[in-house]
Image 1 (cartoon, helix red, strand yellow):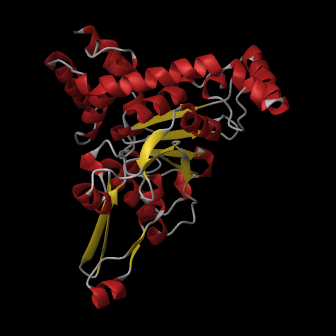
Image 2 (cartoon, rainbow, N blue to C red):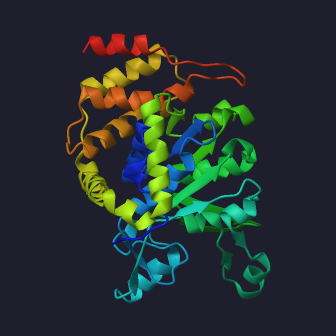
Amino acid sequence: MKHTAVYPFTAIVGQDDMKLALVLNVINPLLGGVLIKGEKGTAKSTAVRAIADLLPAMEAITNCPFHCDPGDENRLCDDCREKTGADKALPVHSIKMRVVELPVSATEDRVVGTLDIEHAIKHGEKKFDPGILAQANRNILYVDEINLLDDHVVDVLLDAAAMGVNTVEREGVSYSHPARFVLVGTMNPEEGDIRPQLLDRFGLSIEVVGENQPERRVEVIKRRLAYEQDTGEFAQIFQEEQGKLAASILQARRLLPEAVIDDRLLLLVANVAIALDVDGHRADITVIKAAMTLAAFAGRANVEPDDVRRAAKLVLPHRMRRRPFEDGTLDWDKVEALFAGL
């Protein structure tokens, strides 16, 4: 019997869009993370912790502060790359994906890490003290109340999430390390919003609300009480469902590189962005990447129109607001009209 303190992901009642957005991001970290907006007590934090616990252990190079993947030579840190070149038999161990939490009081140095300039001048070599982004590599970086985080720190996070690399530069000395992580930000809109420019940097965004059907609320209560009474027994009830979802995620990761989307759907995405007057091209690209990830999650290589439709609902809503305090809303009728013309 498996005993765990983490609430099973598949036991969460409802919140399907939130769960789908998290699943898509662990399949494809290049989607750019997800912003989850919603009132307190809607399982936002529970879902983030549960998705990490769902996945099986992965291999990492032992004693590497960035948990480099021994099977991905293109994303090794400098030290691992150098050692790999000299000796192919680097020690490897298994680690679970984990949730690295970033406190809202974190400074930029605490996030990106620090370079010892004095050491570099005296000894002619770089000495780097890793920050939170180093811990986050290959994990989930979770920022609760991201709307309260310093804007400059949010910029740094989003840059690293987009590039998959964290670069620190001080006094002409620079150091880079892999920083590919799933960024999840949660916020309660009643406690303040974030700038539209930062909203656009999040790949996906969803809004969650509490269940409004009495039967569903009762189910939430029953499951929570059962979990608190015996976490091991509760986990066992959902073990099979958890295993199926984990297997689907791993299969989707393998299938994703083979995903293809035809020019007809590319043109549709471009027309949707134009019709909605979306700034820039980030939205178009993210819709396409999300649609390809949805297809892989469904076990297909070919992207279908419904994949694009579902992707648009996750990618576009938070890009409708262009100015602070503006209530931008997605005109879904315009989108459906374009789909009807396929």
